[in-house]
Image (cartoon, rainbow, N blue to C red; front, side):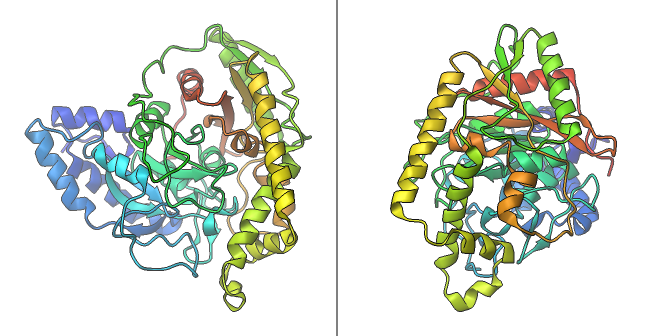
Length: 463
């Protein structure tokens, strides 16, 4: 085996080694397994491990030795968030109330990854039903940030982002209905891509189906694009799924940002909180994009109050989820989830039609804005990572003061957005920025993120 630590290599580099025979899929899995054994007890990134991974890595190794790889990701390890079905493993959603029986079939995106040859090694932790940002749940406990275990990795894709930062493989699936890919990616110093709505098919659909997506969490932008190429395959089970265009999303990713127009967004429909570290990250990214040839200026998108709109859509979806369980069982749910449900009892069908009309108005405003600007640049998060052991209090307020003021707008408008690392705070924790583009222009966010990655390379924690 090579003296290179295979657990820390991007998927693209692993594939190059597989082709040369300098590292095998079994070598890579063993290196990742050693790292998981050593580090995961303190991080708690996994909901379940998949024992078949070793045999599948051995089979992939034999195929590479024979010069017959089975797909563009053959032998590359991947983890799946525990809101997504993997055949043979339970989908517990971080809840004590869910069925412990194994799922009968793979979700569409898992099928896509497997068809490309990826090896599912584990399911990663999520907040209960993906409802909040702090990375804990009643079933699996607290997931911690690999940079500093006192802090949360964020959520709801807590285990996926923590696993990416800790070197538990190169590719990780997250889901995002209000920031659940981008927030933990920001706090863990990794890349988190929320694709355009419908780009990655999903089934079964969750509580936030009209705004939720699935997407990659990786350590490099190119790996995010590579992973998206396998995940973004039409599946008739998802009524929102886009047609299959068989695109490699790495195509054009190195084209840069010369002459692209970038708007710095300071107001996502309300006076959103943001700390000095996040502001400084945006300023640094704006300078780097301008140096790369983009036209960068501040602009107002004219959005409605996204805070009021999203909080109601989020809250009503959670109320529906909670009330589906018998009243005598609800005490087993996250207490904060019960608080949100209690605050949203009484919403009517007319209310929900009004909220959908407002969501469409916001989407229209962003579509008009993107006639002038190719990209939007703004913070990913309002502040740096929260303490992992802090209780969740007043979640309705926390949604806007500590969690998702900068991310939820792009779920409501359904457009692509990415969180990319951008240096460190004075305390040594990761900083980040967010880039968004018009609906279905996932290629532009990948190009711009790759430009920033070139200009400001980012290192993983020394673990």
